[in-house]
Amino acid sequence: MRMAHYLACQSLPTYSSEFSRHDFTLPQLFACLVVKEQMKCTYRGAEALLRDAKPWCKGIGMRKAPDHNTLWRAAGYLLTRCRVNRLLDVMARWAATSRLLGLSSKPLAIDSTYYESHHVSRHYERRCRQSRTAGKVHKTGRSRTVRKLPKLAVAACTRSHLVLSMWTGTGMGSDHPHFQRLLLDAWSRVPHRRFKVVGDAGYDSEAHHEIARQDMGLRSIIPAEIGRRSQSGVPPSGRWRRRMKRMLATSDSRKRCGYTQRWQVETVNSMIKRNQGSALAGKTARSRKRDLALKVLTHNTMIL
Image (cartoon, rainbow, N blue to C red; front, side, top):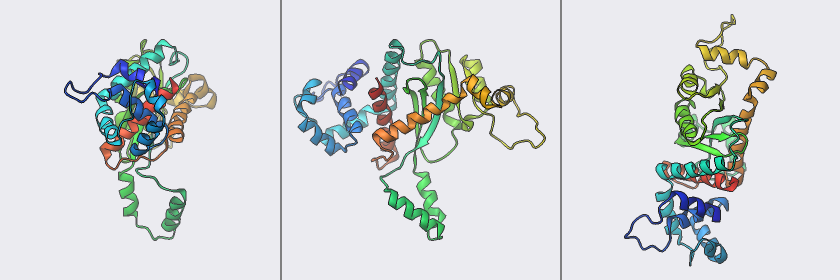
């Protein structure tokens, strides 16, 4: 909680307006939101927890615990894209100062994952699978559910598991569109800006290699698996995609070039889901995006 408060003091203003009541500062409210997410509480549960933990509140200079409605309004104000990026900038700067990034020895990995739009029990999932097998559930119900699934894509350091950039969205789809934004945000937060970036076949594109290698001076490693495979053994089109085909041909070459470190970003997604839950409490797409951003910020704060 103290770490989240100190972090917010470096990147957020003290108050949202000079005409506000000034009962709580924005860094104090952000610290309360991090505690709420870490303890897997609702807004009312976080209010009750903070009322019982008066030493926690005194540790960041609060005389009383904030109301659940105050926390909800603070989440809507603090977890916007601009302020989240400011917080990620400070986190990356701290990690670089402490030499936690480790991008000189291990690559940056990019991957995406999906979250549940609401809490679902394992028994309910099993019964749904049985019903689908028996033909009792139409495909329209499943497609409607898939269109509402929250999606999170992250670019994380494989050495420290720190997330440098993130993208949030709704619905299943290709990973291709958000590669450039993830890489650009992460690249701008690294001081030296010379490192490897690895991704799975979902990010395979000649244009992505050109952006990473020619525009940013990075070394991109992505398997050339998109498209129909040639039966006659013709290499894929594009200079860099042909090079990926040769470089990642064997398990030894994959390990030698550092592609096997890509699995660390899968570990990051697993850590977030295991520590903070895989289901979101938000009812709208905007609130779910805020929930995903808070999960990433809480994950980084726990690492720092």
